[in-house]
Length: 256
Image 1: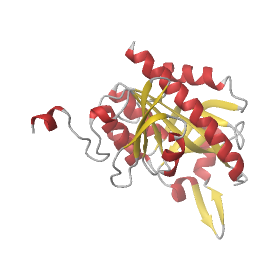
Image 2: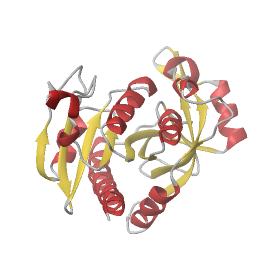
Image 3: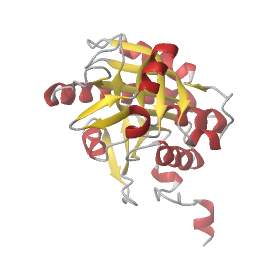
Protein backbone atom coordinates (compact mmCIF):
# COMPACT_ATOMS: atom_id res chain seq x y z
CA UNK A 1 0.00 0.00 0.00
CA UNK A 2 2.84 2.41 0.86
CA UNK A 3 4.44 1.82 -2.53
CA UNK A 4 1.12 2.50 -4.30
CA UNK A 5 0.82 5.82 -2.44
CA UNK A 6 4.37 6.81 -3.39
CA UNK A 7 3.87 5.96 -7.09
CA UNK A 8 0.22 6.65 -7.93
CA UNK A 9 -1.19 5.18 -11.12
CA UNK A 10 -2.84 7.55 -13.61
CA UNK A 11 -6.62 7.14 -13.58
CA UNK A 12 -7.25 6.53 -17.29
CA UNK A 13 -3.94 5.77 -18.98
CA UNK A 14 -2.93 3.53 -16.07
CA UNK A 15 0.76 4.45 -15.93
CA UNK A 16 3.09 4.95 -12.95
CA UNK A 17 5.69 7.74 -12.87
CA UNK A 18 8.55 5.33 -13.49
CA UNK A 19 6.81 4.08 -16.65
CA UNK A 20 6.78 7.45 -18.42
CA UNK A 21 9.52 9.67 -19.75
CA UNK A 22 10.55 13.31 -19.49
CA UNK A 23 8.62 14.42 -22.58
CA UNK A 24 5.45 13.22 -24.30
CA UNK A 25 4.18 13.01 -27.86
CA UNK A 26 0.40 12.88 -28.15
CA UNK A 27 -1.19 11.23 -31.19
CA UNK A 28 -4.79 10.68 -32.18
CA UNK A 29 -4.68 7.39 -34.10
CA UNK A 30 -3.70 4.47 -31.81
CA UNK A 31 -2.14 2.70 -34.81
CA UNK A 32 0.37 5.54 -35.04
CA UNK A 33 1.88 4.49 -31.70
CA UNK A 34 3.34 1.26 -33.08
CA UNK A 35 4.65 3.06 -36.14
CA UNK A 36 6.49 5.73 -34.15
CA UNK A 37 7.89 2.99 -31.89
CA UNK A 38 9.99 1.86 -34.87
CA UNK A 39 11.87 5.16 -34.59
CA UNK A 40 12.72 4.68 -30.90
CA UNK A 41 14.89 2.40 -28.80
CA UNK A 42 14.19 0.34 -25.66
CA UNK A 43 10.44 0.61 -26.19
CA UNK A 44 8.15 -0.48 -23.37
CA UNK A 45 4.47 -1.03 -24.19
CA UNK A 46 2.22 -0.07 -21.29
CA UNK A 47 -1.06 -1.93 -20.69
CA UNK A 48 -3.79 -0.45 -22.87
CA UNK A 49 -6.77 1.02 -21.00
CA UNK A 50 -10.00 2.34 -22.55
CA UNK A 51 -8.33 2.26 -25.94
CA UNK A 52 -5.59 4.63 -24.71
CA UNK A 53 -2.40 3.08 -26.02
CA UNK A 54 0.88 4.29 -24.48
CA UNK A 55 4.55 3.44 -24.93
CA UNK A 56 7.79 4.78 -23.48
CA UNK A 57 11.12 4.50 -25.26
CA UNK A 58 14.38 6.36 -25.72
CA UNK A 59 15.67 8.76 -28.33
CA UNK A 60 19.23 10.09 -28.11
CA UNK A 61 19.37 8.86 -24.52
CA UNK A 62 16.18 10.68 -23.45
CA UNK A 63 13.05 8.83 -22.33
CA UNK A 64 9.97 9.86 -24.29
CA UNK A 65 6.38 8.69 -23.87
CA UNK A 66 3.96 8.42 -26.78
CA UNK A 67 0.27 8.25 -25.92
CA UNK A 68 -2.81 8.00 -28.17
CA UNK A 69 -6.01 9.82 -27.24
CA UNK A 70 -8.25 8.93 -30.16
CA UNK A 71 -10.13 12.06 -31.27
CA UNK A 72 -11.26 15.32 -29.70
CA UNK A 73 -10.22 17.84 -27.07
CA UNK A 74 -11.77 16.26 -23.93
CA UNK A 75 -9.76 13.03 -24.12
CA UNK A 76 -6.62 14.72 -25.42
CA UNK A 77 -6.52 17.00 -22.39
CA UNK A 78 -7.20 14.11 -20.02
CA UNK A 79 -4.10 12.36 -21.37
CA UNK A 80 -2.01 15.55 -21.12
CA UNK A 81 -3.30 16.27 -17.60
CA UNK A 82 -2.54 12.74 -16.35
CA UNK A 83 0.95 12.73 -17.87
CA UNK A 84 1.55 16.14 -16.29
CA UNK A 85 0.53 14.68 -12.92
CA UNK A 86 3.17 11.98 -13.46
CA UNK A 87 5.85 14.64 -13.92
CA UNK A 88 6.06 15.28 -17.67
CA UNK A 89 6.63 18.92 -18.58
CA UNK A 90 6.98 18.86 -22.41
CA UNK A 91 4.16 17.92 -24.79
CA UNK A 92 3.80 17.83 -28.56
CA UNK A 93 0.68 16.79 -30.42
CA UNK A 94 1.40 15.37 -33.86
CA UNK A 95 -1.07 14.19 -36.46
CA UNK A 96 -3.20 15.67 -39.21
CA UNK A 97 -4.94 18.97 -39.86
CA UNK A 98 -7.01 20.56 -42.59
CA UNK A 99 -4.95 22.79 -44.87
CA UNK A 100 -5.74 26.46 -45.34
CA UNK A 101 -3.76 28.59 -47.82
CA UNK A 102 -0.90 29.32 -47.89
CA UNK A 103 -0.52 25.79 -46.47
CA UNK A 104 -1.22 23.10 -49.04
CA UNK A 105 -1.62 19.34 -49.04
CA UNK A 106 1.56 17.65 -47.86
CA UNK A 107 2.97 20.64 -45.99
CA UNK A 108 3.75 20.64 -42.29
CA UNK A 109 1.77 23.11 -40.18
CA UNK A 110 3.04 24.28 -36.80
CA UNK A 111 0.74 25.96 -34.30
CA UNK A 112 1.99 29.22 -32.84
CA UNK A 113 -1.42 29.67 -31.21
CA UNK A 114 -5.03 28.62 -31.71
CA UNK A 115 -8.53 30.05 -31.90
CA UNK A 116 -10.55 28.60 -29.02
CA UNK A 117 -13.78 27.42 -30.66
CA UNK A 118 -14.05 24.21 -28.60
CA UNK A 119 -15.48 23.86 -25.11
CA UNK A 120 -12.85 21.93 -23.17
CA UNK A 121 -10.46 24.86 -22.75
CA UNK A 122 -13.27 26.82 -21.07
CA UNK A 123 -12.95 24.45 -18.10
CA UNK A 124 -9.31 25.53 -17.68
CA UNK A 125 -9.49 29.27 -18.34
CA UNK A 126 -11.96 31.98 -19.41
CA UNK A 127 -12.24 32.79 -23.11
CA UNK A 128 -10.07 35.88 -22.75
CA UNK A 129 -7.11 33.63 -21.91
CA UNK A 130 -4.99 32.97 -25.04
CA UNK A 131 -4.14 29.53 -26.38
CA UNK A 132 -0.45 30.01 -27.18
CA UNK A 133 2.24 27.44 -27.94
CA UNK A 134 5.44 27.36 -25.90
CA UNK A 135 8.09 29.64 -27.38
CA UNK A 136 11.10 27.47 -26.54
CA UNK A 137 9.50 24.30 -27.89
CA UNK A 138 8.46 26.05 -31.11
CA UNK A 139 11.95 27.46 -31.52
CA UNK A 140 13.36 23.94 -31.38
CA UNK A 141 10.70 22.74 -33.83
CA UNK A 142 11.41 25.60 -36.21
CA UNK A 143 15.14 24.83 -36.17
CA UNK A 144 14.39 21.18 -36.96
CA UNK A 145 11.84 22.03 -39.67
CA UNK A 146 14.45 24.21 -41.38
CA UNK A 147 16.38 21.01 -42.15
CA UNK A 148 13.32 19.29 -43.66
CA UNK A 149 12.85 18.99 -47.44
CA UNK A 150 9.10 19.48 -46.89
CA UNK A 151 7.49 22.91 -47.00
CA UNK A 152 6.12 24.12 -43.67
CA UNK A 153 4.09 26.97 -42.24
CA UNK A 154 3.53 28.33 -38.75
CA UNK A 155 0.55 30.31 -37.56
CA UNK A 156 -2.87 30.14 -35.95
CA UNK A 157 -4.94 26.96 -35.84
CA UNK A 158 -8.71 26.92 -35.43
CA UNK A 159 -9.93 24.23 -33.02
CA UNK A 160 -13.53 23.04 -33.05
CA UNK A 161 -15.56 20.34 -31.29
CA UNK A 162 -18.21 19.63 -33.90
CA UNK A 163 -16.75 18.17 -37.06
CA UNK A 164 -20.13 18.02 -38.82
CA UNK A 165 -21.62 21.04 -37.06
CA UNK A 166 -18.75 23.54 -36.95
CA UNK A 167 -16.37 22.40 -39.70
CA UNK A 168 -18.09 20.39 -42.41
CA UNK A 169 -21.77 19.88 -43.15
CA UNK A 170 -22.85 16.74 -45.01
CA UNK A 171 -24.63 17.22 -48.32
CA UNK A 172 -25.16 13.92 -50.04
CA UNK A 173 -21.72 12.38 -50.53
CA UNK A 174 -19.89 15.71 -50.32
CA UNK A 175 -18.89 17.64 -47.23
CA UNK A 176 -19.32 21.39 -47.47
CA UNK A 177 -17.20 23.84 -45.50
CA UNK A 178 -19.52 25.54 -43.02
CA UNK A 179 -19.96 29.29 -43.45
CA UNK A 180 -18.84 30.19 -39.91
CA UNK A 181 -15.56 28.36 -40.44
CA UNK A 182 -15.08 30.16 -43.76
CA UNK A 183 -15.56 33.44 -41.90
CA UNK A 184 -13.07 32.44 -39.19
CA UNK A 185 -10.48 31.48 -41.80
CA UNK A 186 -10.88 34.82 -43.55
CA UNK A 187 -11.06 36.99 -40.43
CA UNK A 188 -8.32 35.39 -38.37
CA UNK A 189 -5.91 34.09 -41.00
CA UNK A 190 -6.05 30.47 -39.86
CA UNK A 191 -3.53 28.10 -41.45
CA UNK A 192 -5.20 24.87 -40.34
CA UNK A 193 -8.01 23.42 -38.28
CA UNK A 194 -8.28 20.50 -35.88
CA UNK A 195 -10.21 19.31 -32.81
CA UNK A 196 -7.54 19.43 -30.08
CA UNK A 197 -4.89 22.14 -30.29
CA UNK A 198 -6.48 25.12 -28.52
CA UNK A 199 -7.55 22.95 -25.58
CA UNK A 200 -4.09 21.42 -25.24
CA UNK A 201 -2.33 24.79 -25.41
CA UNK A 202 -4.66 26.34 -22.85
CA UNK A 203 -4.44 23.41 -20.44
CA UNK A 204 -0.65 23.35 -20.77
CA UNK A 205 -0.36 27.05 -19.92
CA UNK A 206 -2.55 26.66 -16.85
CA UNK A 207 -0.59 23.58 -15.75
CA UNK A 208 2.72 25.45 -16.35
CA UNK A 209 4.05 22.99 -18.94
CA UNK A 210 5.22 23.35 -22.54
CA UNK A 211 3.04 22.31 -25.46
CA UNK A 212 2.65 22.72 -29.20
CA UNK A 213 1.14 21.00 -32.25
CA UNK A 214 2.80 19.86 -35.46
CA UNK A 215 0.64 18.32 -38.19
CA UNK A 216 0.66 17.17 -41.77
CA UNK A 217 -1.89 19.06 -43.87
CA UNK A 218 -4.00 16.18 -45.19
CA UNK A 219 -7.25 17.76 -46.44
CA UNK A 220 -7.67 20.92 -48.52
CA UNK A 221 -10.27 23.14 -46.86
CA UNK A 222 -11.78 24.42 -50.10
CA UNK A 223 -11.55 21.52 -52.55
CA UNK A 224 -11.91 18.61 -50.08
CA UNK A 225 -8.98 16.94 -51.82
CA UNK A 226 -7.20 14.41 -49.59
CA UNK A 227 -3.53 13.53 -49.45
CA UNK A 228 -2.50 10.29 -51.15
CA UNK A 229 -1.75 7.36 -48.85
CA UNK A 230 1.81 6.82 -50.08
CA UNK A 231 2.73 10.47 -49.57
CA UNK A 232 1.11 10.48 -46.13
CA UNK A 233 3.14 7.44 -45.09
CA UNK A 234 6.36 9.19 -46.14
CA UNK A 235 5.45 12.44 -44.40
CA UNK A 236 4.36 10.62 -41.26
CA UNK A 237 7.79 9.03 -40.95
CA UNK A 238 9.41 12.43 -41.37
CA UNK A 239 7.03 13.92 -38.80
CA UNK A 240 8.04 11.19 -36.34
CA UNK A 241 11.70 12.03 -36.80
CA UNK A 242 11.11 15.77 -36.33
CA UNK A 243 8.94 15.23 -33.26
CA UNK A 244 11.32 12.80 -31.58
CA UNK A 245 14.35 15.00 -32.25
CA UNK A 246 12.57 18.04 -30.83
CA UNK A 247 11.24 16.28 -27.74
CA UNK A 248 14.57 14.64 -26.93
CA UNK A 249 16.11 18.12 -27.11
CA UNK A 250 13.47 19.51 -24.74
CA UNK A 251 13.80 16.58 -22.33
CA UNK A 252 17.56 17.06 -22.25
CA UNK A 253 17.13 20.80 -21.70
CA UNK A 254 15.04 20.15 -18.59
CA UNK A 255 17.35 17.50 -17.14
CA UNK A 256 20.57 19.53 -17.34
